[in-house]
Image (cartoon, rainbow, N blue to C red; front, side, top):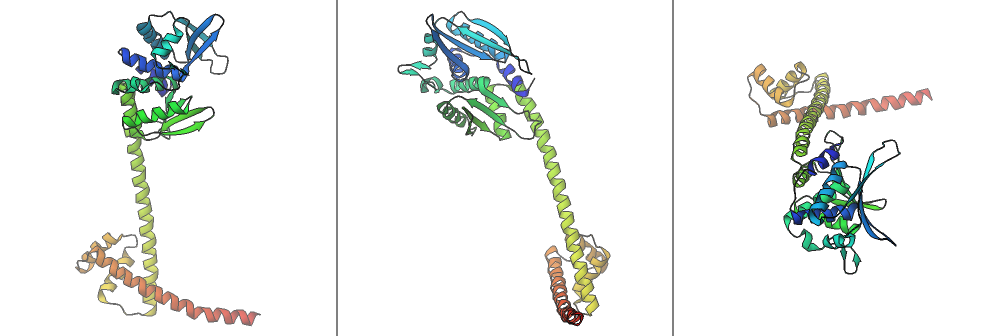
Length: 327
């Protein structure tokens, strides 16, 4: 069973009062139901691949409208061969849709009236219904956190974003084929949404996985940072050794303090700047701060770069003269 199915199965066991039930049914029907008619009359049908959702919709309709419901199961013939559960209501179809705010004066609407989702508990029930009918959440073990609801109309998608914002869960919308997808990729906001759905066990599982995953990601980042810093230290030390060799080869005079740093670096080629401060103190009894060490290293660099430029300038004419003789 997928993580989304686990969440929906847990939600389907929750209890709802009458206003919540109607708000949830409104969301479920706006997302998945169809209104049909022929010479025999009008009927309403709702179908899902999730047995728990089918049982919930059956229970809510029975409790609210005392209506006869025909439940059928259809076996899909594709590779997955999942069952499709279809609920058909042949009586009071129009009355039910009017009660749910879907059928109003002027025809069918893509969103319920504001009065249905004005209260916090009804808005929550409406979002619960939308997720049951059209939502999915990536398992926290996967690469990215992702929650989405694939909705049939832009008006319904816009309302969904407004309701999620009311609960401080920001979401975005994108177009996908014939639908509108409302989604968020923030792990902490997905956890808040699971809390809003009332899926406590799924929330615990999600948060446990998220904490573990974020912990290991943090360790990896720290390891990468340490490796990068170590490589940077080794490169800096290598450059300093080259400058020191040029200074000593040229016989360039330096101050005693700079000489101490040069000797310390020659004997400790992999030491960091901070470690070099401690080594100089141990070797010469001289206390030096990190900024002081950086100042002396900068002096070594200045002399080394200057000598390197002079050396390159001296070598250039000889190379050009050699090329001319060869020609």
